[in-house]
Length: 92
Image (cartoon, rainbow, N blue to C red; front, side, top):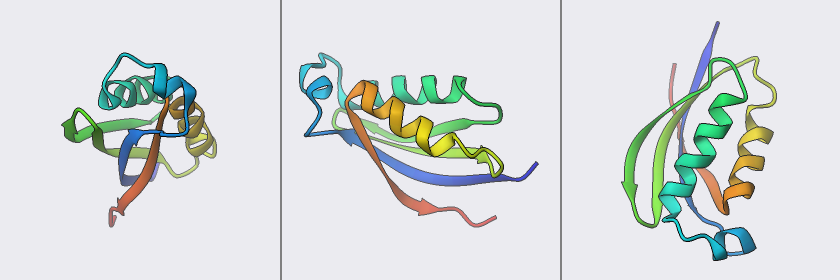
């Protein structure tokens, strides 16, 4: 199994009705989306690198054969009203 790490930044999606209505901090909704994402696949994990009210930075790792990790993450983020972007790809 080959694992691929990347560092991603999660913030509130300013175009999301769900995000606008959320009573949670953006980082709380990001963690909720990551927990759901993690539960949908084998060998998915994350480690929080930075957490404040408005953003969460986490290192995500997946099995390189996991073809649904990206679409699943997008779907979970949309469910919780957050968006994500790559900060850096880690070297293996």
